[in-house]
Amino acid sequence: MVHASKAELPRLSAAHWPTGAYRREDLPERVLQFGTGMLLRALCATFVDAANTAGTFSGRSVVIQSTPHGQARALNAQDGLFTLVERGLEHGAPVERTRLIGAISRALIADAEWPAVRDLVARPELQVRAHPMARHGPSTPRMVCSRWWSAGSSTEPRSKGPD
Image (cartoon, rainbow, N blue to C red; front, side):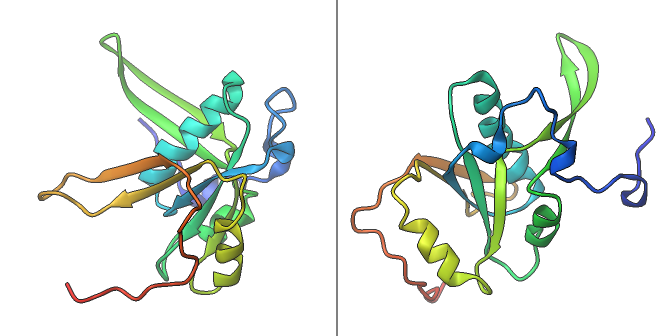
């Protein structure tokens, strides 16, 4: 199996989005995703993308980078597009396929763009929030996707208490 290096891959842009695909630029931001890592994108954004393609959802995700190091700038430079590579077994046979995921509208860096994050959280059209949870045990990541609610939610940053 040959793997391409980053230097060999073209930079994605809106021009790469297939003309016959859903019109991503017309979809509202309805999902708030905390985290820009590969696993979270491979799960959440791919599910949103599949639902948009199937016509069962009509929205895109805004991802929030909550740490100083993440993929927000790279995602924004690629108009929110990324390539998903799926490798595994299907009906006992090896498969490898790639597809372009277009469910992310933009990425915000919480520390640098807090007013934009606050404005986003207050928007009534948000329907879903997704965020990773703390690990349970040595290597069991968990993720929560839930319907959005706005009553009583605070938009002010909170400092982390003592562990």
